[in-house]
Image (cartoon, rainbow, N blue to C red; front, side, top):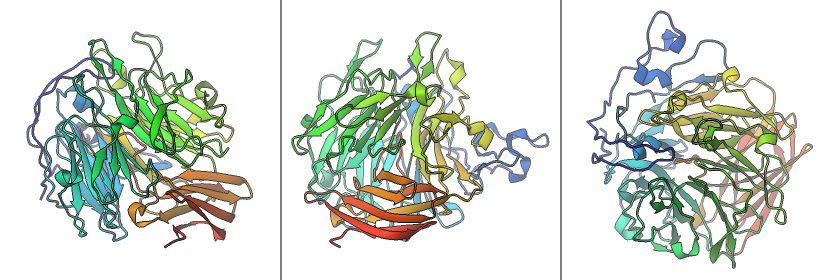
Length: 553
């Protein structure tokens, strides 16, 4: 029985493109008829697909990516509000983790549009809706699974328009209220979250964002320091967050997506913030992790930053940064699209290589990920798209982008060619190998609707390695750890992160495509903490998932 409970709300906010609206929500439709798998999807001449379920339909033809939403039990009518508020139009997130430690993943879906969030368990074939006793204050924007009290079980944090609620995992995969115990008294609209150990004291701290609150009479909380037992203290004074003024004349913070990432390789996690209205920020950790300084330069020029993707796409040993935005180059208001900021090292900093790489034209982008979808050893880029904006109908059926790497620092959009055809209102995103076949699949959160899942059916003989880390008790997933994989073709790095994509997060597993290299010479792990250590394993067999434990365990 569904027990996520929300309060209908009436809101009027200023959005990233302008405009506004209001509405309240009736009860959702929980058990709609499924899409007929034999209908041939949108191309069928025999049977018409319900428009509310069109995002579940499988295209005809032999495609590299296959829409398996219906097969996985994730196709349902979540009820789409015909007159959503601006806040509702931005929502839609996903959280994926193993919450009961049975080796199988759970998936939380936040729909937006004042509809109920849902929790599913994967049984090896389908996702089965799971009963829970969680009751929320209001409409959830996103849900995150993170072990905040170091008991080995992932707790649940709900970001809502009404604020943040914390729920403790009871060890059986169910949850009990923990907000008052946690000390997080954040009763204001809260969008995305990132988790990381900003001060290297061994436990996971939290950073929240508050896009477009419209409030200037108090200081919103962002950074919460964990005492290691799931109790937090507000440390927002350590983070210089930028504000912006829209055409409403109200100055507010407009951050959509944060990520902890050590972009300068000094061992301390920095903060990269995709911010709306021309204010994306680079916050560098200084003074041994005690404070963040604004290191944003004139290179950072995205006007409407929404989603983040952070990874070493050029394989030079440092983390690069991709920001989704709006591409509207001719008709006012002019928007100049996505940005790819290549990291050229501590001295040189970020360089804008967007046009060189060919990733500017993404229309209205949201969640993004770097992932090696064909396992050729070069990271590709995917991002969701779409927005319902008065006077801008070109974005309503905006297709998602799949920028496949050409292996030389450039990318080509091959979404249609490879069958990853998605034109729903995509928001959050998880790129992960849910069926452990060695290929990265795509989970898309749709605004006002159930998710869409594309299974990766690439058929080539490229190799891969998947790596899970087990850290110390206060950070069992080793968030912030840096992994280096070496083969005959050179080295690749990956950093364990939680909260990269817009309103979403996936499992902490690192995936490396290896191309034709069939031998891994060695794998190095840098383990963060007050006393960081390293470990190495050698001569690792390709084509498998492995687990590496902290040397002190």
